[in-house]
Length: 104
Image (cartoon, rainbow, N blue to C red; front, side, top):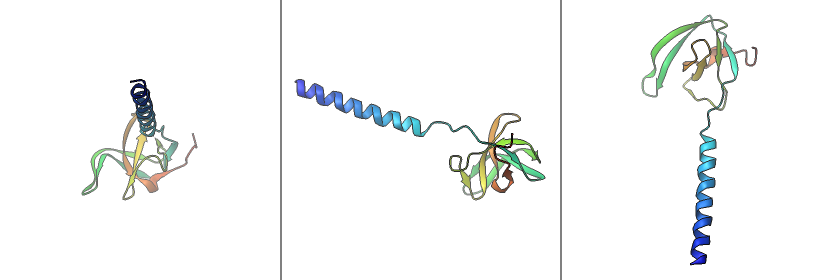
């Protein structure tokens, strides 16, 4: 019985460690400060792999403060998951319009 309890405790510990590391892997990455470097950039609500971006939210102007962390936030066919610090919401815009990292 003691062996069974020890084995059960070890199993629970292992499950706890896997769950903790899985939760850490899904942690939100704070977007790196950047700006829109295009004269204007369409900012869409979401991206569909079959149809591209959809749900135009607004058009961002040159110098608008945005956020994107290369390697942490997804880019699909040139459309990058981006945070607009104006209204504080997420959307998608062209990756080539993101620049000026850490400029503000």
